[in-house]
Image (cartoon, rainbow, N blue to C red; front, side, top):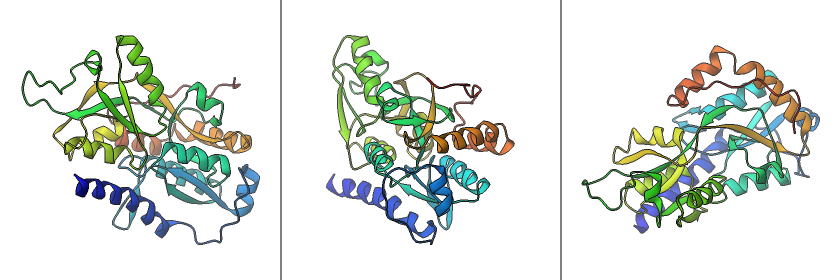
Length: 286
C-alpha cells in the first residue's frame, strides 16, 4: 500500500512539475495581492489555477489538452494575453492562491455555495456536472461494501479532496437519510488519485465529479460510478472580489464563446454524459 500511495503522490507532483515547460517565459512580477484586468493587461500574462486531470488540464507527450485549458487559452488569445496555468490539486490552495494574488482566476469547475460567494466572484455558468460516488463493482449479490443507493451510505466513510464544496452536500445527505456519513478529507491528492485508490482497494469510497469519474472508468473497469451524490448543477470559474472588471471580461467573452461550434465540440468531448444548455447571463448579480 505504501508503494501505491507513493505512486499516487508522484502522479500528483508530475502534474505540478510538467506545466512549467509550457509557461510563458516573460519575467514574473512580485505578487502584491489580487489584480484586476488592467494590471493583467499591463503585464500581458493571465495567471490561472486548475486541477491536473484528464478533463481539466493534462499533458500527453508534447501536447497540452483539457476542457478548462482550451477555454482559458482561447480567452487569453482573444484578449492578446499569454496564460500561465498552474495545476493545483488542493481546492483550498486554489482559493488561497486567488486571495493572495498568485492566481487571477480559478479555471476549474466551481459549484456555487453560500460560503464561496462570501469569498470570491463566480463567472456565468460554464458547464453542467454532478458529484458521484466512486466504488468498486459488486463481487456478489450480497456484497456488503457495495452501495446500491444513497440510503446505503449510512455509516460509510467517503474520501473527498480537502475543502471541496461537496462536503456541504454530504452533510445534507446525511440529514436526509437520518444517519451518519463519515467524511475523510484528503489534502495530498486530487480526484483522479482518489479514484485510483478506490480501484486498487486502498480506500472503499470517493466522491468526485461525474466527468472525471467517467473519464477514469475507461481505464479502470473495476469501478462503479452510477450512484449520484448531488443533483446536476451549473459550475463556474472564480475570481477575486477585487477583480470585478476581470469578471465582466470573462462573462462577456463566455456569453459569446459558448454559442460557438468550438465550445460545443469541447463540451461534447469532455462532458459527453451531461449535455449543456446554459441560461443567458443575468442582467444583474445579487
